[in-house]
Image (cartoon, rainbow, N blue to C red; front, side, top):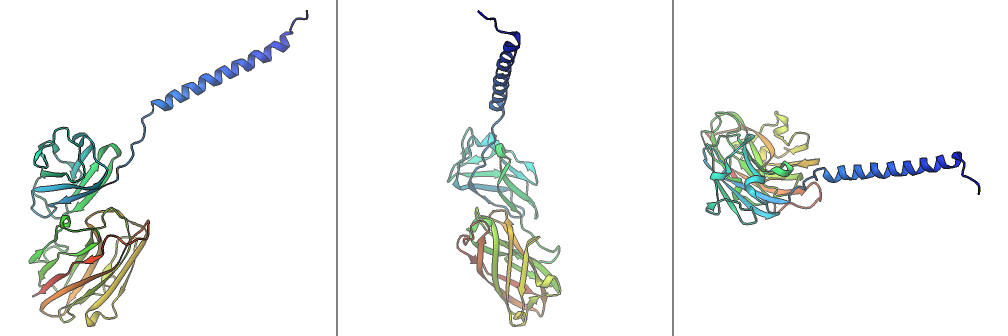
Length: 295
């Protein structure tokens, strides 16, 4: 019988060792991958923030639709200007929160320090660090402009609603600015067109300032002010990236000049309000009229 030569055996042993090393290495890598924390899937939930008005000390957080927030005390935060509020002292549907989940139809009532104009309120899903809803407490656009004013609580609006901030205001200044806000629900706004009618003997758009109106930063905004002196303007704006969804989204800054003392309504028609991802109309577009008193 012939003996196997050492030259023939060595390659076989080397091959077996390589296979064994490879199997062990793959096993180590697989074990490491299995041990890695799995990414948290973002929630799909529509959350409404009520009570976000100046001097309010109560917020009402409502779950309108979508995924539940499980074990809300550990997985949900309410932040004001980045500071986490104390949820354990809040009530859920009139009762203590305990180990409750936050599901469709639930209402969380939270006592907070008195709110100021410009405060940013956010509801955050902590496992994914996801902002589910965010609003800014409205207030005078230009300090000292409004001697009397009325603001709309975004919590009372529906997807598709667009309104003036302030809704009604009184001023004696020669030029001033105000805003248009929209409730986009859970849609990202990509384009809109509005028509505003007013009394041109009282106010007109100040076209010397950004053409009279400014859309969101980075958006393309056009103001058709041909009928400014007749009391009708059409403004449209669009973007390929869109704005984050929410029930209080600023879409326009309007610049006005006083023509004469008096009162004028601001008749608002929303002609387009479009989701950037689908191209579909957001909710039921609805303009909420306002009023200005020029002293």
